[in-house]
Length: 199
Ligand SMILES: Cc1cc2nc3c(=O)[nH]c(=O)nc-3n(C[C@H](O)[C@H](O)[C@H](O)COP(=O)(O)OP(=O)(O)OC[C@H]3O[C@@H](n4cnc5c(N)ncnc54)[C@H](O)[C@@H]3O)c2cc1C
Image 1 (cartoon, rainbow, N blue to C red):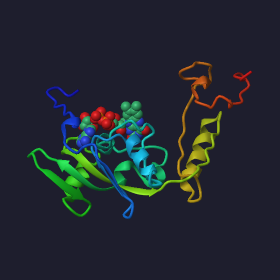
Image 2 (image 1 turned 135 degrees about the horizontal axis):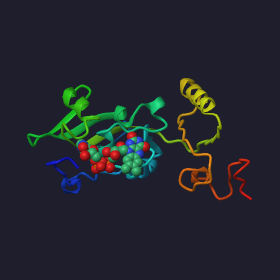
Image 3 (image 1 turned 120 degrees about the vertical axis):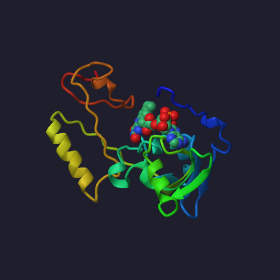
């Protein structure tokens, strides 16, 4: 917490809970305090979804747009803040201002990634895309870091590659927090490794 900082209870701000999907124009208008997980659930009802995410979805729209909003698809769809079409911002003079790339653009680009220093995001208009019915998820384990980074770079440079690429480093041990057991797998799956066999 900042010394002499200000904490704002976003629940106190009127229609801050809204999630209005515009199917024809493929966007969603979302209150600043709404969690991304609730945005996803609402949009999936229309077979739509935002383009860019954080890994963890129990974060607010206003909070991640004030940072960047980065995950494994940012290399393809850019950070969350690049998928914003319009913002409504409460500024220090007590006025709510609508801003976008073409309207009050100084405010728009200051607030995005602005760590809350330029105003409070009370509403964001987020681009949507059609949600996939099914995805293919492949996990590859490397023992050599150089091979891993070479393949990861190959994937993100290729136009014909995946939409999401992410890497994790795990310690080569049985430590439940940092080692092989920390890799989440379904109960019928296991990683093949000489010193950590399932059976
Ligand atoms: C468990 C966890 C996982 C995370 N994973 C990711 C990830 O995968 N990718 C990623 O990019 N980030 C990630 N983050 C970081 C996250 O983007 C920031 O912590 C973000 O600020 C979280 O939003 P919040 O709703 O918790 O914000 P809060 O903690 O409530 O606020 C953080 C700061 O953001 C600003 N802020 C918040 N709301 C608004 C608003 N409406 N208007 C203006 N400013 C505002 C304020 O300055 C505030 O002090 C993660 C954070 C956590 C806790």
